Image (tube, rainbow, N blue to C red):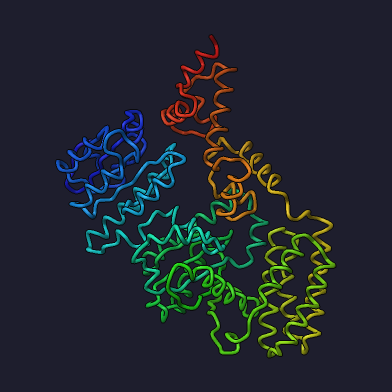
Length: 528
């Protein structure tokens, strides 16, 4: 590919010629306004090319003989700080990859390389280069940190992981340290929608909404946006934009309605500074969304900051115990906890409004568990909350809630076995892989099939199987390919799409990495 002054220049660095060839043909460089300025087999060759071609992007293996990828990056970025590095990293090299991010890499991708993922990463890098051209220095901001690493870590922090907070400490001068607030956007009536959509249809809708939100967030000064739970997205904005919350909320709800015909509501948190406040702000934004049950769909809601609210302590310990008793369908324990809850409210002498707010919050938390099991009818929650509002005493409120909860738990015990063992959940995932490995199978789709958040799914899958999801999927596909090679005469290039690979050359590369032989060599060996 020839040089072009109007295009961003890319250098490819890898000591494996087959990977260099694969990268050249698999990515639509021309469409992305990029050109390959050169290729190098090692760090020394790459250094010479940098001085000769002055590239904008370097895509490099992280481990190479001689000068490795990180050493190469450090040396190059001393003189070319705006140059973007995208690293290719083997399994088991996450510490190494994290060091690369800490030193200023744009992103890293795991081997075997997913060319679609790499194309998306290169697109994002191009967007950053265009912003740099406008003197918008975003290299070390939260917007250019690895999308995958950032989302997973943010998700884990919101879910309460302290280790992820330690991982993020190297993000100095993060825009979150300057003050920010969170918005949580949820599709209205998602339980009903989820029941109407098939798996693939649901995936397409959620993907479309994510694209809408990402584009809108960039245009409106957002720091980041990512899916958290199914049908729910988290958006972060600088604290300086707090006065625009109402406008932003109305605009994004209208945008989703215009583009998808779907109804959504959004809750805004209080402002805070520091990554360690993410979980707190999430609770704040979701709590704001509870108002939807009173005010109706397509609403913009805000975290309450009244003195009454701040002084009253929400009974989180009782909520946790209640949630556990619900998950195990322990009706007797649940009834005991209701009595403790009544004592708690009476002991603290809370106002009626505050009591109503807290009981409503508790019921929404419990409701989400039943919603996850898919056993409730549309309108169950609204009817319960209306009953709370209509109650004039704490005793009346408790009767409404105990009645609803008992009914829901009885329906569950008749039609659902809760708290499935981890092995059972992963067993279902393996069955899902078995039925879909020939397709473009994503972690998001697998997590959706398991009924878990992506973060929880990744952790559980690794705990149970010893593999990451992508490692397991790759091994499974290669085992299927070996069976076809051994037992049929199907041509090698025809096997790739049968086991989920659209590019036969890439399939051959992955097959050799796993087995040590090309598919042709493997077939000859087993036949002889």
